[in-house]
Image (cartoon, rainbow, N blue to C red; front, side):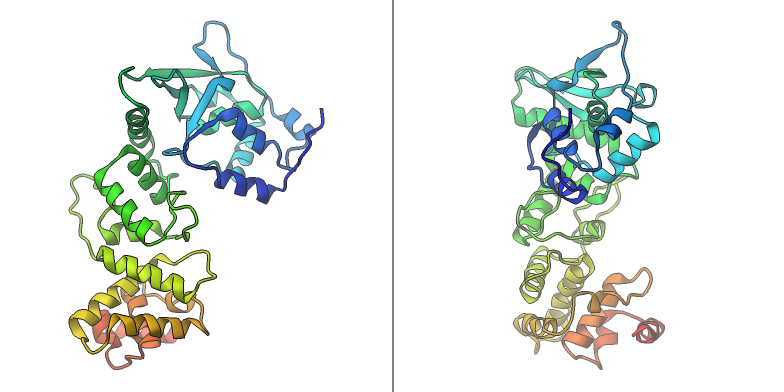
Length: 338
């Protein structure tokens, strides 16, 4: 039977990226994937599924849910590559997926979401599972938090997961430091993994997380906070005001502008933060954000962009070097790149 209502690859990718947080049936997500015009009937038929014997511990794929409050969103590019590489679904490579039965009776995939989606694309009706049963006395929020904890334990050390995805799962789990950072991002109108719909996107999340001191603590690592929350928030909003049509804000720029706020408070009381924001707006009239961030000394991104703001935005030519913390050699390197 021919598929109707086809969508371009980019539109399907966007639809998957924009799925709201919360519960989704896997079959509904696959229905979106199959609308991709890349999936012709011939292509779909070429993806071979797998069958399980009656002694296998399986569940019906149509009964499975995913909670996008902690799970990573699907990446259509990777999904296609895996299907083509394996010529469908390999139960030997996939192993079993992990699901949790919540007190409401529903089964949620907490690990193996992509494998389950691939199985459905290959028109399979069952998949091998390991089932964890929640305490029937807990509520849905507690169940979600524990699943997020399991997901983190299984995946957070996996190099495939980005810092933003790990933070997202920590936030869903209810970790206090992640909740605090989520509040900062919300007030700064920054959207990470859909937590602030309508907010601005931001790359380089790991740098921001570490600068704010809310990153995951590993082996009792001491957390050093280099940027104040209020300075980060004010700087993020100032950048968004200066470049209102930009869909994203740069992590190095936000942190460096926050650093400049701290610097002028301590070393240049004659320059106010209001003057800094007005100077940035004036600079933005004829310059893009990247003009302040593209030239950087290796391993010194904060100092490099701080120097650029002091020199190009505030015109503090004589003080830029001293206040930024860069050496003469660092300055020479940056000026050679201009």
